[in-house]
Length: 233
Image (spheres, rainbow, N blue to C red):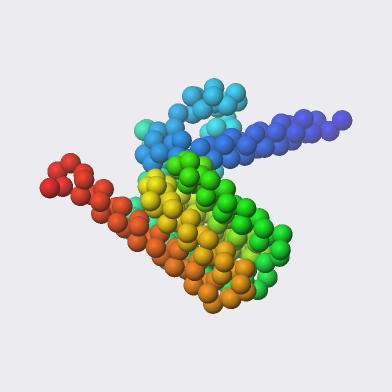
């Protein structure tokens, strides 16, 4: 028997476990369980997930590289708080990508895919009626990611996923307002309507405008938070 085989299997198992841990921590960050600035404790997470500390440590490393965590020497690991200027740059980049996605889907989307995104909009409408911001946020992420995936461009999809993870915390702030949730929902309906009509320029424009309005709401939220901060007056 090859003596290296057990070691290789152990390494594979460890790598797979670290990936599973990474995905769970990432999920928790994206849905707001760990807010910006929160300190993540290796031992506590290992106990919570029923794993050793090694996979958690490796998951921290991967999430640091992905831009969701930051590691500070002698202080620990924290959920990253993205500066407003960086978030606005991401919005601009994403708007250009979404314009292309909208145009692409208007001429290529299948009937089955159209039914899928319509179903997601219906689920979001139910979340708005129930005033369930958490569920709406989860569905909102899925709605946008699925449309990018449906475009069929794998490089764009990979880039989008990284950027949207970094933006996620700002988008949660936008979606915490019930009135804004309804506004976002109506914008989603307009996007789907434009795509279903086969009007490529209109679909691209609807998606571009949706992102730029999100950017403006992010600016407004930031200004409001600065104005409400102690000592700002």
